[in-house]
Length: 389
Image (cartoon, rainbow, N blue to C red; front, side, top):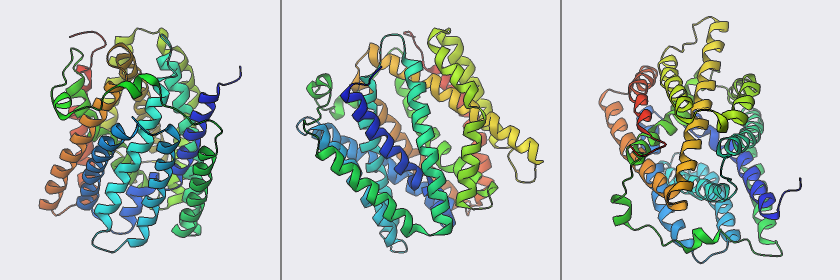
């Protein structure tokens, strides 16, 4: 069946940015680690990234009322190029905070635009399957970018990544600007008033969304930053070996994941969510056991289980999230999730940076303690309800 024009443009936007994320943003935590930044500094970077996302979201929520979608997409490519250019300031006092603010802005302009467009593709009874398909597309393209990015960083240096990313970003920007008809955001999204501070602070629902949104923020960066650093250490601090390891882990359970994502919409929702959240909780305790001295077969078995449990939970969690968004306040629910999650990221990792600084930052040890702490907090995801509590 032929895809509609809007769906084709959505997947073009998604594909270009997913590849760009794989080329370098995926490597940001290990790039900082490789250049001698401590866990204290990386935690501060994450906290400022959260603040940058919040500022950009406030701006995006007002820009999308008057500007065509083409402009928002062009802005996302422009912010990504600015993020990459900031690397050349590395070593300057302003580098880390500026880099973090731009990282937060890029995350916002990509993920909020992507979620808003993805939400419009959902039907009544296919959220899990569609999110699964969407996740498969994103993961495959990101992994391609990771492979190229890792090779280029190790073999040719950062300049090659910058030039390739800039070229792709420029071509992507031009391809959207040259569309014969301007792209428009969904009417329902454009008609909603921007969220006020009073609305954000007063948000409360019977599904326990607010505490779960606050909880989820730090977990996202524990997965995408701290855990990536652990994998980087297992890969002997090689960018291309890290890329190969990530691709191997993703490919090893892809068939099983494909079966689950096609059936999840027809499974008992609460039972599946409880199983997924329980596995996710256990995966954090398993992360704390990961060590390069483990027998190779046992190590890969643990890594595969962790990868599967994390992906399964994200599928179940996002199915519940988008189902509730469709049943409640639609796009406003998406924005509220980001406001709360990013606030908790900014606050949580600011506190973590303080703790790491006071402890003189024994990085390897604190990574393990972070995973143990996450394992104790992860059961709180079970608060999230599909029906009023």
